[in-house]
Image 1 (spheres, rainbow, N blue to C red):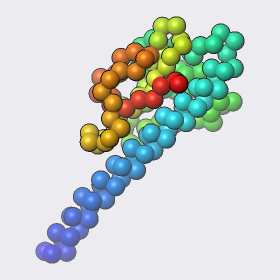
Image 2 (image 1 turned 135 degrees about the vertical axis):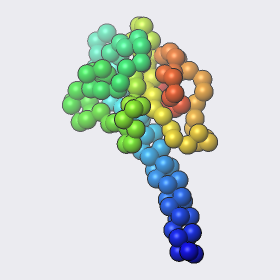
Image 3 (image 1 turned 60 degrees about the vertical axis):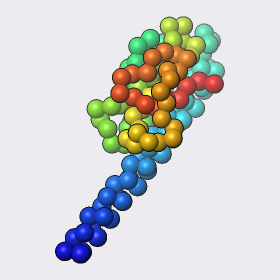
Image 4 (image 1 turned 120 degrees about the horizontal axis):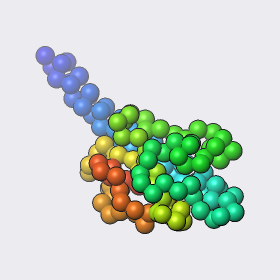
Length: 130
């Protein structure tokens, strides 16, 4: 019985560690997409990002990030129902990329909307252009 209790405690602790690792992965993924979008922006003669005036899944097609900018647009490590989302303002001069962090007590949770527009429902973290 004692072994069962210890095993259960270890599983609970391990689950929290895995959630933290996924959160770090998500944040890193969004910053990788951001870096690629900045290179894309600097290459565009029109000085704008690929316009998506309502939040849409952050895929190569939706962001304009072909292989010359990023080998593969990352996807959420664990949550297929909440993919990374991409949004620009109507003019394409500001963007944000969103994800869902599992730990609602994560110190990086954001409640305010980015410059590009409204945060999609259920999402709680984003990065945006500088």
